[in-house]
Length: 288
Image (cartoon, rainbow, N blue to C red; front, side):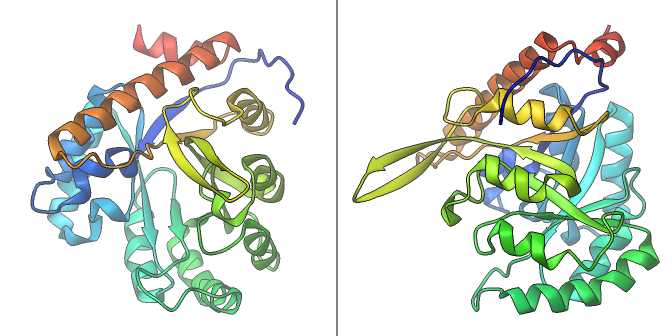
């Protein structure tokens, strides 16, 4: 993708997903309350939190969930919801909660936690069954490109449906396992993009094999400026969420600290890139 300067003022909403707190939430017995995670995300400087399946939002009853939303409103943090399922009953439960959120978007990963792997036929059947649920709740589905299903297949699967009903959550690293670069994923899915996960990475290896490692934003192999140009050329108000992708070091407290350090550094880098493009006018005015 050719990069060109971009100077128009864009209202930025920089968020983090609950996978940015991957190690904090990994062990349910040690994880803080979801309301505490909301406060932590805001304290780090984020404007939004996408609460995904690793945060176990559906383990909360309705009163507990409303408390999370109350805390988010108090601290000024926008909430989006995310799940991983190909079960229509699970979708229904998530969609009902997503319907009460301002964006009315539900991010979804079309995978199971166990085998068998989801097939293209499974995806087509699930989407056909999902459409009445989405219509009844007035919610849009944002399908995240992920490990088991190539982005090419996802692009084909959504063709029968309106972009107003089903779009994509584009992740910049999840499709590397399928030998699909971030640039190719953006090309395949970008016209239906509803939100973005920015993850940086390093690819290491030789002709005998390779390994992908996570990196703090701006320190890896992701062509960040090109990705941002693609996003800003298509959205006046892009929904961008940062994530970490760091292996555990076997020390929970150290892992939690380093996750937050990565998030702070990544947020600083992203804001710097937006400032350079003149895209933080509204955000800066609000914070001042």
